[in-house]
Length: 71
Image 1: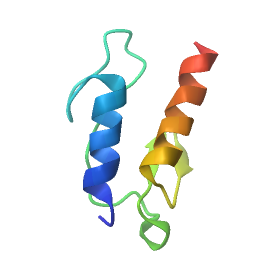
Image 2 (image 1 turned 90 degrees about the vertical axis):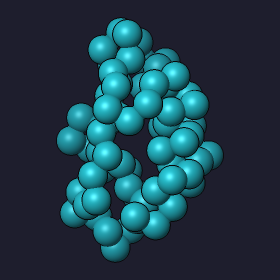
Image 3 (image 1 turned 135 degrees about the horizontal axis):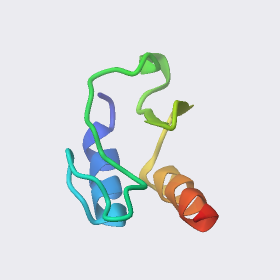
């Protein structure tokens, strides 16, 4: 839960969707949960079963950009 609001806001701004929505290309959905089992390294997200931990808004931007470049 630590830093969750900033991370969600960054994801929503980058992907132009809100929690519970999916991008038009079906590449990303934002689903909110209280724990993915990485609470000791929070905040964390899970993308295709890969955990990303100790996030900052800047780290989130870099992670998402990496996936978008693979497109």
